[in-house]
Length: 158
Image (cartoon, rainbow, N blue to C red; front, side, top):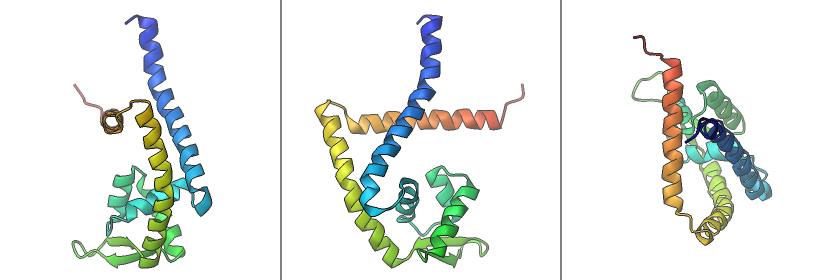
């Protein structure tokens, strides 16, 4: 690979990730339009469906900074959508769960959202794209970015 092409690919990767993020946000926004729910809220609510969990679990699982995850929890709690109970494992943290009514609502939203997922699956299948392979590749890119971030945060001294 020529040096010019290597530079184009190197810069292009992060740009394509950025653009993919923007395009997927548009798709999610369109899919959720009838529900009035924002995509980022839906993502956090959806992750909370797997509760109970600690705030740290929520932040780690969604990739959000702890303070941002706490902001979502506070907003959802103010809406009466979250139940917090003391964590029996340590007595200091809390376990977060969605209320039953909120769970039912998010599951209804998920049924609406699934229509868009099914449509995207059909588009990929028509193009001969193996969705499972694509997910694996995207996970690999995410793992590499996580590693690069970790390396930048924890430089090795030699």
